[in-house]
Image (cartoon, rainbow, N blue to C red; front, side):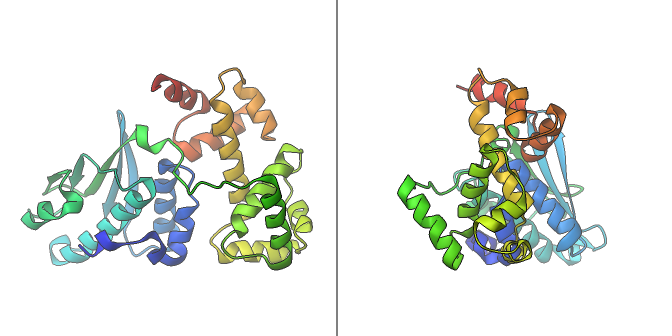
Length: 270
């Protein structure tokens, strides 16, 4: 019940980093990376692919689960709600698997009423359809015309506003990328900051320049893959990858599927 009230902003820097995820798949991979390397409390988290479902698995291997059941459930549902808030509140998993004995009260909570709940499992697990995970995460629409965009750049140069800082940088990176330049020094010069100051500002927001560059590349790739007349090799070239295999590896890291598979799925569901 406590986790149901979770807002992504309540997770602090952890939540800010999750907000930068490209797709549901990238979101899951980010959670795993953060919990395994940065915010680790001994939890083991991993993904398992099974046909058209990806399972997000969660376990405290060094704890006696029955003696720490409340803490285990709370931590698990924090991750559940973080995933749900990013993918969309109309999403529910079909099945939830839990360690430990049956807890009848869980099925009475609205948050879990649409899911089949299984107990006495080897570890906790959430089943998520691949068709949900490979799509770009929904973000607030940005209806910015040319004049507003120029004003935003000028405002950015003079004050580096907190709310629009990363979005404005993405717009600037996009324009530079399409012009053939993806160097961080060029971006820093354009906004009147030193390279180190720019990196520090991004770090304070749980970001890096290379993550923003990836975000722009991802957005452009998704946009261009909708047009089947554009060869994937040409997309890789326009995004300034040295070879198509490098683009394919990046895209699979973002979405869990290759560019050609993404294009196929996109058009086969229409």
